[in-house]
Length: 170
Image (cartoon, rainbow, N blue to C red):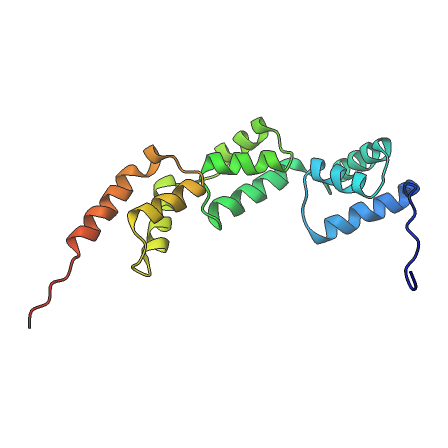
């Protein structure tokens, strides 16, 4: 085939330590990551396990990599912006390599009002007037809320929906 380089079936040569550090800093310049995500990204680039451990240790000592700060930042973003329930936040943090205990500890320190979040989701989904209670319940479930957490507020919404029927006379 013209213009294409022949595929090298051998594995790429392992990345040297300096290039691996540059790759780590490049990743950190674009986004905040957990230790687990850093190791995964470096391994995908062919960095050895020993070099990964050394780089993560260096980044942790120099405070470039901090799982607690990453978890706190992500938890606040998920609670505030995505309106996730605390259980869903813990799930998302563990997917990013944060230990469940640390995720629970971080959530315990965050000021969060479940009822206010649920009310905001109900308001957001009912703003256009086409969302029924089932659609709102689905939105709440997808965000990780349990029925017991939102049953009363959804019942209030249903009652208000039924009482707001408009009758026209001519």
